[in-house]
Image 1 (cartoon, one colour):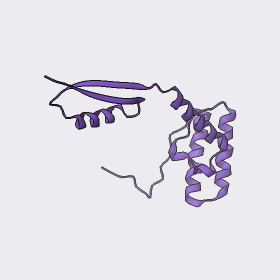
Image 2 (cartoon, rainbow, N blue to C red):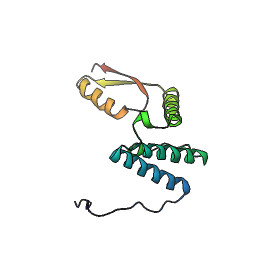
Image 3 (cartoon, rainbow, N blue to C red):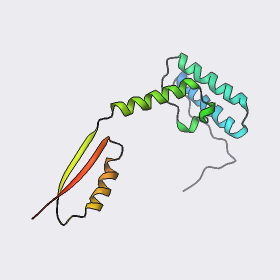
Image 4 (cartoon, rainbow, N blue to C red):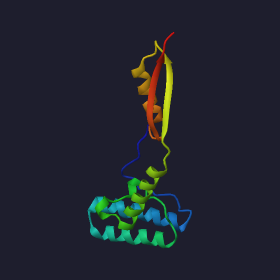
Length: 132
């Protein structure tokens, strides 16, 4: 696998919209702040964010383009908190009950179920065994 050459300048593709161009600039402002810690880049970030919002944009900023929480626009943090709260309120709660033959290992089944059902709103998994 060939890695990128650190001495070569790379650029982003041309933006497809004004909103995408503003998001590219937000990435750039965040990157510059992480490199320099210059507060001017935080101001630029906030200005760009508010320009996006004034255009009706209501999206989520990629985690790679976020500043630390204490430097992010409060409006954005409120939006994210509201979205997360709403998601937990609307996620369905599911109970799964399985009946297994006696010779199946409960621990292994539970491990696989937890892996497979992680994040889909399963509230409880119960296993019962049948006798042959």
